[in-house]
Length: 202
Image (cartoon, rainbow, N blue to C red; front, side, top):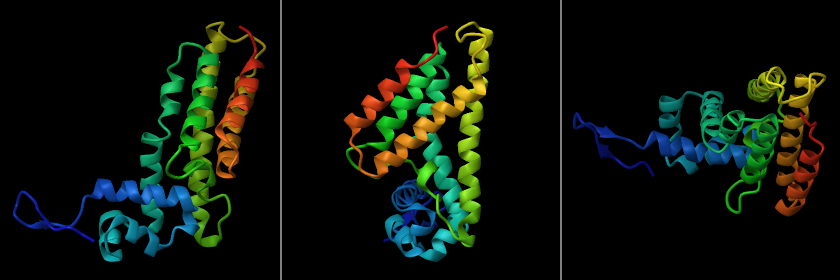
């Protein structure tokens, strides 16, 4: 239900947009782009379809805003990991952050950025393209950080930053898919630790 609150001008304000977006993000995270119906979204957000369109635009625009919120919230471990002083620290931060976020004891499992639109019809193509670009951007940022690690002699000169970045992000995305499939945190943690033991020495 929309709650009517008085704004500074005395006019009623329909709802808390920030809270509504948070709830929409959780619906997309749990059900994916196409699985999240307008009815499910507006019910979770506590607003009417008219209010949703007025505040956020259409479903695709809402999904884009939800992904931005996800990147700045549950998925912000990537930004933190990129600030680690070593390449191994970066890889560790990404994989452990993925593990932590995708196997939460409550709420959706997996990753919104991976499962949100893996399978989509023509109407969901924009969402699928958006997520592909989001994943590629993440990989590109990791590659750039690993290139710096080579320059700083933190990675051996023969290391391939692009390959290492793809390796780490593919592992992270794989963790997300496995978590959504019900694989337990302990098993995924063991896999993560095994992958990190194979990290190239400086």
